[in-house]
Image 1 (cartoon, protein in one colour):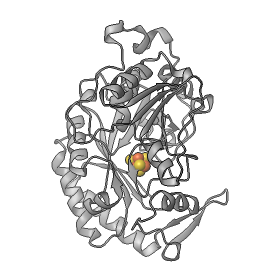
Image 2 (image 1 turned 45 degrees about the horizontal axis):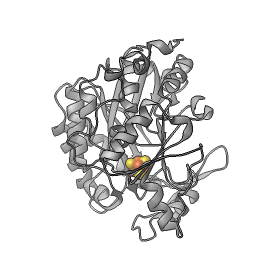
Image 3 (image 1 turned 60 degrees about the vertical axis):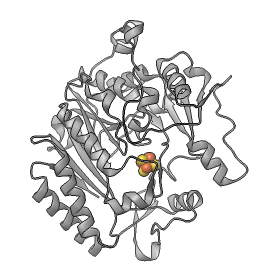
Image 4 (image 1 turned 180 degrees about the vertical axis):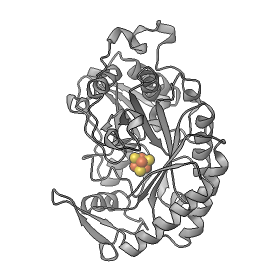
Length: 377
Ligand code: SF4
């Protein structure tokens, strides 16, 4: 097991002028501009808080230093108003002890490593709905050295990818995108850069993140040691246009992925959530051809294929947030799948699943022949 020496952490050890998080927004197609940045008391004075305050102010946000550690003032008079306020607020908080006891996250990684909880985008199928409670605010974690120390403390104990013959070579794996889109916040927090550099020096460990954003410029020049895999979370154009508000266009995400591959990062495609919308065969063929065109030859590429599903809880939250949604969440045309705890999720019927899987896998084999297919779900 590796142990972290706090004095060896680049955030602490570097001279002030060179401290991470550094930089700010570069040229991109979509940058989140929060209306409010709230620094909670326990996060004050950290590089993340200072950067969020500085970049937030430059972007026109109201910056508030809270007197305590409770986030107040998110509730509006209506559910719509609460949604709007929460989605336009970035809170900088200290990750609670529960976030430092890392949980397994099959099939993606051995452990979850949460840089934040919540996401500023407006995807009408968002998998966070029903998982996170309360107004959908984004809470960025400021105690990055604690997150790195937590990763160290769990090294060598993975039971998901570490137990898989095909993926054991990745070392203990950590997924940073379970409860957020970390690139969406990167210009404000610098948290991803911090983890990428920390993992570069940890050969037995691998960091993973997936994103619907494209501002990778601050990541291209980092010393990453090939230990971080960026995946672009992409979908057929028709799905992205209808139901993925506030995200970068799919073409921009693919272009960002191509630039990351060019900078030597291992990369991947998270194709999700796959839906049998009208014309889906051609729509997904177009997507995979576009991905192939965006990536340099010889890229170390993985593919994850995830179909759309919902739970009664997520549907209730999503129809509250997006009452006019046209997204199909009709349990009468789905199949119920129960987990061992009695929870239920609704997936597509077997025939539909089989047809989509055969088509998507054939497209990958044809257009991305060197890609490793990690899973279909
Ligand atoms: S980008 Fe991901 S986490 Fe963010 S709203 Fe969309 S689905 Fe949810």
